[in-house]
Length: 124
Image (cartoon, rainbow, N blue to C red; front, side, top):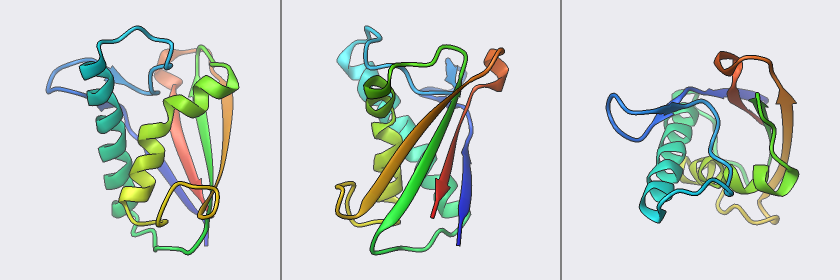
């Protein structure tokens, strides 16, 4: 069965900046802020997967679509989604994020407006 999970905008503090897509690893942030953003994406992904009751699998194929005004190069896009991937593991979909358990594919789609930015997971 296929599950489609939309990750809503994420903030690291109440009333603070909200992000619809994760920061590029090239963004110059203090290490503590980098950790807070990664953790925020991880927790939001965890709760969105739990809300849909995605079952545990021995091996999963996950397609992540990043709709962004400013697409990143491929390796930065994969790295920026580390918090999202950790949320998938934390939610118990797979045991680990290694290639043995998770087949990950990331696709970027350019959009014209910041309000159209989003992250969508397709778990197979």
